[in-house]
Image 1 (cartoon, rainbow, N blue to C red):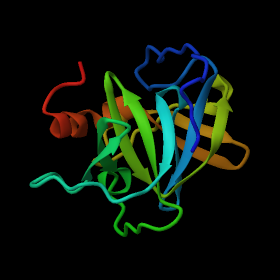
Image 2 (tube, one colour):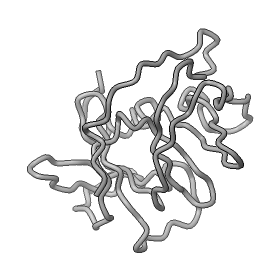
Image 3 (cartoon, helix red, strand yellow):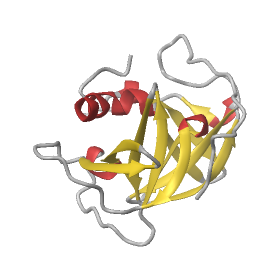
Length: 173
């Protein structure tokens, strides 16, 4: 289990052009979904846990796998692979849950595996290109480039806002 609760805060601001490009150095937890590598702000990460089947909730959206009891806190578990439209979702020994602090909520997201924590400087960040897809570009911070790796950096709060509202019946605000 990796505990990121003691990470030191780094400030950042989105560029005024609305591209989501970051202007200061940030740390990201890199994780895999299918063959792609994504990143989420390390300051949002509470811990990483092995996947265990959650208690299901009737009539929940497909990506909301259920809830788990994490030291007395009921945590909704959202499968990011399903939410991102990955066609073949498999649960194996590499599947993990990243426990995130989003607003005043604790949420678990299922991913194929985590790789490392990366420190990215502004020069390693590229604006999100205009995409002709169903994916809202507001859900992306930037595209990170580290050596020959490219990371899709998610604005996890915006990306999960609808799911969190559905899971907990109220707004993040």
